[in-house]
Image (cartoon, rainbow, N blue to C red; front, side, top):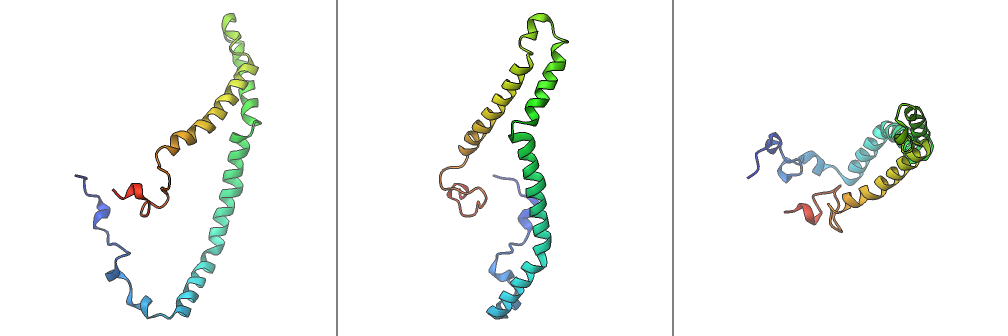
Length: 139
């Protein structure tokens, strides 16, 4: 038995008894006009948020993490400075080129393996973004 959540007492907004009678009295044109007004009122904020996320967030992530530019240079510099502090037998493994290649290889393996481990959690045809309609969430 699951423990009750504080949200269990929240009203179900999709329940028919809570639907406003005013909304049902509006004509189709009035509802369309209200929707159009809502969209245009929120458009500048939504555009700015999505633009900033796309241009700064995703582009920056792809430049720094997914391209073979910054990370290999950083690993090469890090391995170059650390190699001098290691004993002679271990310097072979701290070769900056080996460390840089290993770092890039691990990055690519992570990008290939992570979707495989994530995909097994959702059976074919299920949609984790909409749990109300997917068959795996209905039990």
